Image (cartoon, rainbow, N blue to C red):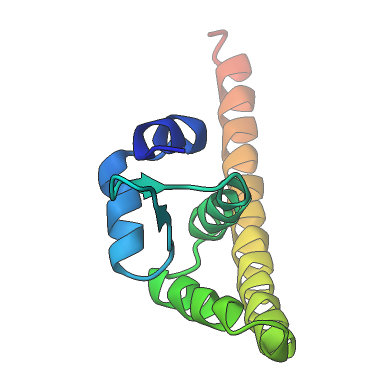
Length: 120
């Protein structure tokens, strides 16, 4: 599929897709006219890249994962390790965010009590 169609399907801009190609995250084929030709299976790959970015994986680590992925099954263990480290960091950030939420809720409860005392 053409880049405009692929961009609409993935929710990424054409500019971002070209950048991802430039840094080695995407490797679209070319049609007879020389235009980029994205395959259906690349939609799933882009979804995974977006998930990694949204969960805070640095672009350099995503590039490393992509390089390992392109090397095939001999890198399965290394890719799993990379994802496990990312999952650990994500779990830590989630726990920190949960602690922040608890503190905010406690502060709002205090304000609720003060507002009730003051008849507001």
